[in-house]
Image 1 (cartoon, rainbow over the protein chains, first blue to last red):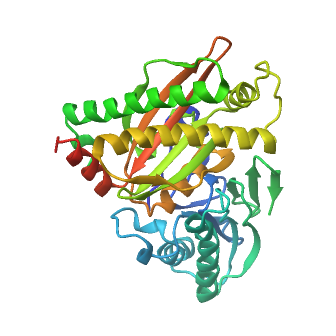
Image 2 (image 1 turned 60 degrees about the horizontal axis):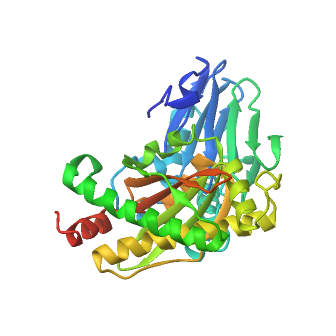
Length: 172
Length: 203
């Protein structure tokens, strides 16, 4: 697991309570931290939340499974790896039956190019399949479409805020 | 080929290709808009793909992008990126309107910008093609206006996460009325970059 606190540009001045999850990463935190993952395109943001412990995790997955890419890199960028790991780390050995999931992203950024079109949808399918395997209920989602989203997870209420240029602010 | 391992000579060669590509692009744009278009000396840099969003002020910044996938002897992608005000200026120039007339980025403006970007991409590709004597074809261009990070992410996943290096060509196109800043990213997959350098005779 890795948590990156700052990257360049305006993102360098981060609120200390904010945990930034970048592309292909996952992180776990407890209230009063707020978790943020910026600019989901074809990627899918997955949040798992434990109401009792006010603890949760956020992952930003890029591709369905390691079969998609031969290139070395962060293994957590694949849904089939990131989701079991995220569930493990949020549950920390205690029961994962309290966890609920909310997901956002998986859009198709560039119109009708055949090669590009399916990645977002396949990401969503794989994330849902993994959640079903882990028996974690998916309680809300904001997926598909052709626009980018940013996703925030508030760990006290489990509220997920999805921000996009086209539709403004949406609460899940 | 790692971007850090490129020699000064290799970077110079890629710069030269970029310069000539930008030259072709200015000629093509002049013909499109019907008035002379000059180009400033392009600023050409090689940067790791993860640093690309920072060029436009962070992953959540809004940009207009036109993406074309490369087919043929080289694989990778070409990504044209400009800020909203520059997109509107391009649309005005192509419509021979006074710059500042377009206020919103509608379907008409999108079409014009996509067209112009596609011409720029082809001009650059023609330079790459001529230097390397390879046949490279662009796929039909696709337009998106959204967060920089998401656009880059969609593009890199589309070329299979293979591109590590982006060749950034920052160009300023000037007519008598207006200057337009635009960036063209060439995202070769590592094998293709080796092929290009090999063909340029500087491995």
